Length: 320
Length: 257
Image (cartoon, rainbow over all chains, first blue to last red; front, side, top):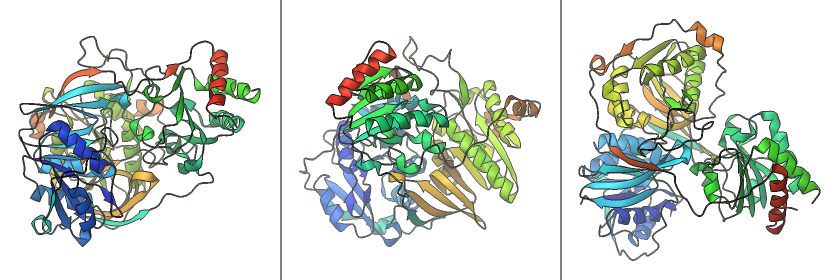
């Protein structure tokens, strides 16, 4: 069985939630494996020690030029230090999406993106679960990992391994990683602009998606939100179309909200959208498509056209 | 600037309910409506806007069958000057690496300063751009939602978590995968598509490109409908009845103020 590595995403000295999820995913591949965490950054000793509680071995690459995670530099470093037949796990987040596909080419390994489940290994065949078509269907996939693999794991798909009983050791691989000249240079992170409403503080959200169809129909949702005393939020396509401001977007690339009640109106429920809803709210989903993934996570589902349903609901709320 | 944009013909899943075929090894494709992958429209629009500013031309390429020609014509109607169809049985059932291998052959036939792909398509993998860049040893940035042309290089913004934007400088030639929302893709009407109906689109086979088929890394065992959690309690009845029931439920859950 090949060696398993987990790339640890981190920010401001703190490991991302995915760090301990990857430990669980690694055990699903090989319960007996001694998994190696890879921590790349500048001044990451404390983080490496944290990770040693959860991983048998921790490889540290500590350099000023990776103080910010530049995938181009890190890809070249990993291709150099990780054995070619290793299985490398990372989160399917915006960094993993930047790093993973090219790393699989550099390592000449199969690439398994956005994996949501691992069913185990039979010989050298790893059976995994992926989703296609915006989560409407899932598929079991088989991958021969005899010559290694690069696998990106969807955040939240595996429970974090909180056992902290690995008692691992940290090894410094900085010298092995060498110097990398990058043709892509990191400049800065531009923080998202604050909007007129902070939806992260809202208790009730009326959230609209593609089902709203036309810009002028936003008013119908606004009227419902006003009647309910709720704030108006939305999914990504509404912001892409510039019908509502970015600060109202719920999802991994927008805001993370923690309301008591979340009204998903004409939202199909992509994992990026669901990733922005925390705190286990009461979710009401209204969608024309009875197979929309949102119905699997909602508490109450209604198969209807939101353009018919919302005005009716607004009337009933007003007279309630 | 010479820009190549890689596009894909995909089933329109926003407008269609996807069902699994009776054999369980694919989705039911007969009644599906196909169109250009949504992300690719943003990539083509961005390429056209860059060329409008700094000059050059936009070429669109797809790997597919004869039916894929329609998506090339649609993108040419937007303003792409040239189209290239890569069609060969060797690429039937190809995964991201197979597609990237074919595209590498296309890129190496001409000189491009910038190669764009959509950030992802119907399979949600988001892999072709990154693989292509690695095969060509070119710099790469994914999920790009801003491009500014500088001298010999680009200033690009990547969409990262929390609505933040990561700004980098990247040397050309390079490969970028484009995120939705970077621009507002122009509308294409039937008349626009008719205008480009007779433009010749060269077709390349695997041997024309000097590449061969790549065995897919992932073998699909079966398709199934996912079950996450218990699923919603579905309300039944007329719109009015469901709205009434929902108001009662919302009152109980503190959803009305």
